Image (cartoon, rainbow, N blue to C red; front, side, top):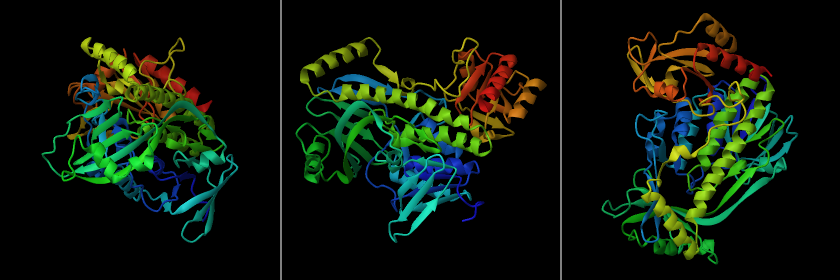
Length: 520
């Protein structure tokens, strides 16, 4: 392999996180090679929920049209007591959707992974190799990766500029680097069962439900099409293999289904953990997804956060490979680790609520949550639970505090331009961008600063009377800016907000700050 063809980045692991990272890097023109020990996608039940940020990432690689058959609506989620009393309810915000996609969706993971692998074929700089096992990783500062073909035993080596371990909770890459986990003290065994409902008259809940029963906590999820998922806590003293037998599974499902009403598609037992790697980078080797964090599934954030890792890391790797400052790479762990740790703590707290086995404590929990419902505090917007990026490459105000909106996803309205209607990102170039309210003119000084940094500048009109090439339909961005006391926003390549500005002068200040942070 010539140096001109050699991969700049090797991604180890082609689950949903690894294959997304491959697509993202290749979409930016990076030579990338993705490698996986398995020859086929994993077929047992794993993730089932994803959010609008993930769909926006798939949008950026041109994969959303092909995903239509793999996704479905995500119903509201309810927590109910053993007696069926409503304890808590999670909902999604109404339309117009903040990111132009439904805030939460269900999906079929094997089908999603196949779509992403097929999508990879459109990128000439991306190579996928399967059936190859990583057997050695030398010198993370100048990584050399040795692979063994599982069928032939043939050995091949790669020496990329960067390596990324997306190889799961038992990551060979992480273990090779001798990186340990911070244990956040949650280890609960559960059975996960996916059923295909064949009787359309089967009487099943229309919402997702967490059954907070101390006799056996369990979960019900409405999946895409006819898929319905049940998850059952494995109780102390039970054997996981015994619980996962088909006869036992039907006993557990008997309150909802007869055997002639549905088909058992697949089942597996897992121990749900709360872990975060102590380091996410060593030299030029990085970790992403389950390789560096594992969390309880009660907010469906495991895969979601892994894919957000890739959006954060991919543009930074591309920036450095185009001769940008390597110090930018330090912001990956600085931004993602504390955020993911906080998400894990939120999921863990919800898990503790759901997994309570002590009847006395369960009654006290129920009374507290019922009181909150009666006080009007029991219904929450799911997306409001999650924190913004608080560290790393986000703008700071004059007093050192975060710029309003910094670290949040920038809204993505539907926009119209020259008769074409599309989501905002599809109308903009990749990279950094300044978005201005439609009634603001960009002065030559701002445009000059932006041009020197390679930052695009666009005005987003609210009506045809405002002279701008892009006009939003629902006032989504304008209302968001107004809520932040802003008239402009500087957006990063991963669509996260660097900072907002009340006027053009402050927008110029954001560009100066960005320059100082990128070249430091």
